[in-house]
Length: 179
Image 1 (cartoon, one colour):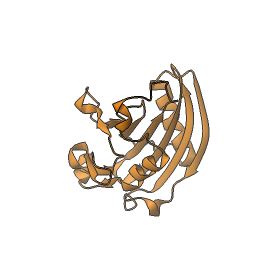
Image 2: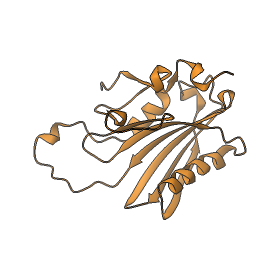
Image 3: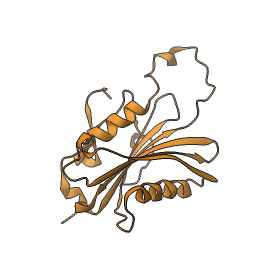
Image 4: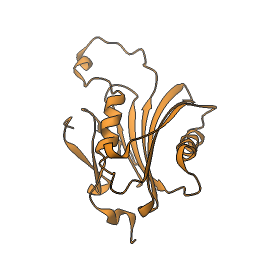
């Protein structure tokens, strides 16, 4: 995948710029219809875009925390630790026309190992949708750094996550069904 080319998501209904080398997990295994999952070719890092039902009973920071805690429950986390929750400037988003609220949360889950999660919650009430983008950032492993794998793309960082979030673009609102 080219570093500056928009990648189609959800059958072309959305697109976003993913970091160089991102592998579409749906080419490797089944992925739920409401998710697009990409993994790094040499690390355990992944990027997930999910279309979720709008949690209208939650507002602001509480909505971001709700989705973080939900991910933790699904993954069987023994410990959930929110490190920060900040509003995201809507003007920086390609989705600013339909997104009414956006938050970035960073936290840690304790599953088999501690995993840092960075999540962007883009709330899209006109389509009854919470759009959740998650950057799974597990600790580095001790794989050997000698060999041809060093030619692989560099490890992803928060700048790559931010580029994905801000470049996320809606092309076909019919993905949300009749409105």
